[in-house]
Image 1 (cartoon, rainbow, N blue to C red):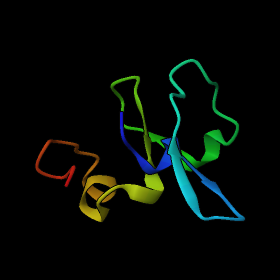
Image 2 (cartoon, rainbow, N blue to C red; image 1 turned 180 degrees about the vertical axis):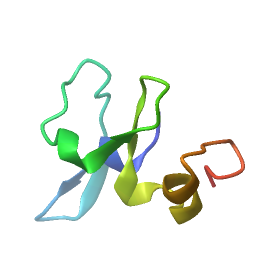
Image 3 (spheres, helix red, strand yellow; image 1 turned 120 degrees about the vertical axis):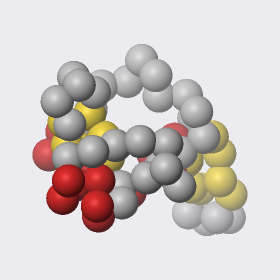
Image 4 (cartoon, one colour; image 1 turned 180 degrees about the horizontal axis):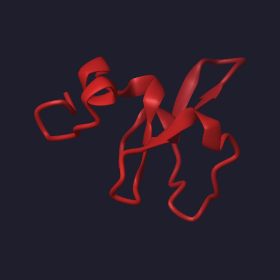
Length: 62
């Protein structure tokens, strides 16, 4: 999927490359929040109401 967590930036040229991190493991699990459905979500990029109400939907994923 195309997400900020899958973008690699080459510092010298600022070239962005997409990476497939599907088989990678989390190095910073504290940056993710589990909403109770056994799937972690990146809290840095989530809507505030999703975190406050503990509800996640396609409407909040914009």
